[in-house]
Image (cartoon, rainbow, N blue to C red; front, side, top):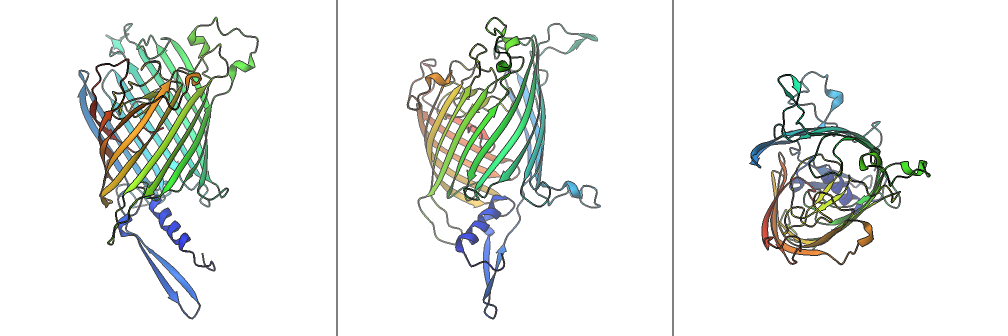
Length: 449
């Protein structure tokens, strides 16, 4: 700002903040100091080149005897305030940094999912307070039609999940200005109608999941696509009201699971840390660095009342790179390359785990940092495991793997990944699992805690 003393650190920080917006070509960044000897001041000119940021998703596939299709679009620099202005729709009004995302997925009668979200990064227009609202609905069934000759089909089994959420994020200046805090409220309703899929312990009735979510994070990474330096540390807690504590004399042990989980109660804790360290620095106008990424993550679901038991929702699943794309009961599907999908989930793949740990390291090298196609290769070592409850948690009792991979970031399609993982440990419940296997992924942070 005018009047400040010159600071090289502040100049680099400003360039980092511009890069984090993901609106500009990182290879075209320029910093031009313009000196004024008479006044003894310096103007600092930042040269930027815009790049496309919107994404479109259109994919289809065949599996399990049926076709699966997805269609989605994300606008990362939307401008609601310009929607009524003449000539603004080219193809959409842009310039205010708002994010709009719409996505639909279906494989016919078995599954349909619809999601929409909106983010205003400058609520009120004066401070970077981000407001995000989202809504979604998914319908899963056994493939039977809803009606037969105009009458309800008695053979149809369904699970309908409807959800809404709202959150607000704010930057903190203490302990330093890398910190942000995000607080939100979400509601999910689960409507079971004879839905006997084996994924849940009851097949009929309704469950409600009302939860508060708080996230405190510190993010100083240099770039959102290929970070070279910096770190990201995040602590989150998601909790429902302790409904059972309001009825201390009630005997919950004799009730059915559907009655016990009519209003789900739990508290869910997660801690994640990532560090990026440059090991080399290349020459030329656009230097390329060999980067070491180290990461650690852990999660735990707790309960207020042991008579009710652990929540059947919001659980952890580990193993492989599972691309379901489903909006389903808040479950978190975490990748561990080299193993079959979900194969490391305790006590089983249907129930899900109450505790998880995952950590590892990656050695990354960029082949291209061009914004139209950012490409980098990696070699990795990682380990992780899950437990049915937090009572058995042991961060040293883990399954290990290693391998190589590649990431390609295309502005219109996001991040694409291809990995070959080699498992170091045997899985007692899967003696015939292949020792090594390929994995394909789509999207940022897919499979992370």
